[in-house]
Length: 166
Image (tube, rainbow, N blue to C red):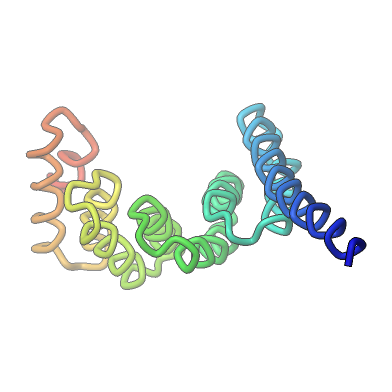
């Protein structure tokens, strides 16, 4: 019995170290990414995801690294995991929308952006993405509505006015 009781604290401590390891790996990956070492950062993000598969931020950051290399298919794949883990995060949904849009999957992008806006109606990235995706897929009335709202929220945001003028 004493043997089992001694193992319990060791088991619990190893779980905590696993979480710390995932956090440390993610921190290292972030540093590498911002130093311009994208490929090593991707490997560190992957190790962080293995250490703790429930960390949605790892998948979000990994997707940004993939997108910086124009690997949009991989970015969308890991963002789908992040969406499953953190269903209520509008930032993750917006990022998934951008990844889908870069692949020309406009309907998927519109769904992701719309979901982000359902959670946070004034999410600027989601409004821009929704407007751009609708415009590029021939849905001009929806594009005008989203981009007009963005112009109201941020009158000095040039990108919304540029897309709206199209």
